[in-house]
Figure 1: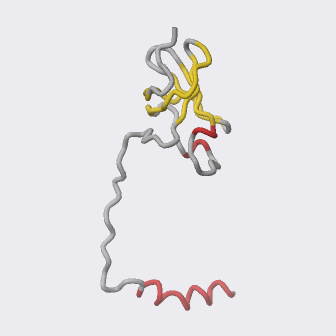
Figure 2: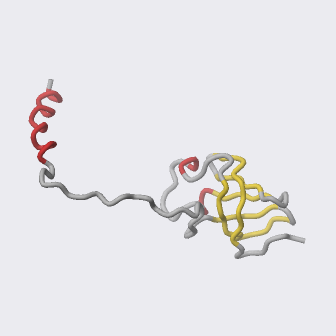
Length: 112
């Protein structure tokens, strides 16, 4: 009998990354595949941009192939469980002056 059911969000360790998807293994010995079509709603050029080997990520069970192998998805899921740590960029009085001052020089270099 399957440990997980369709719709469950499970955590697993990334064991393999191929052009067509990400392989996951669970603590109970089960495994699954996140097919490239279940990684993002946008075009996925490189599956390796979405996970790293040995990284623990979350995935949603969308199908059960047998008792220990699952079809998984990370579409619409905060699969890494991390929040963006972007700091706010504060505007300065100089703005784009540094770029503007170098622009003519860079254009001349490029024409050479």
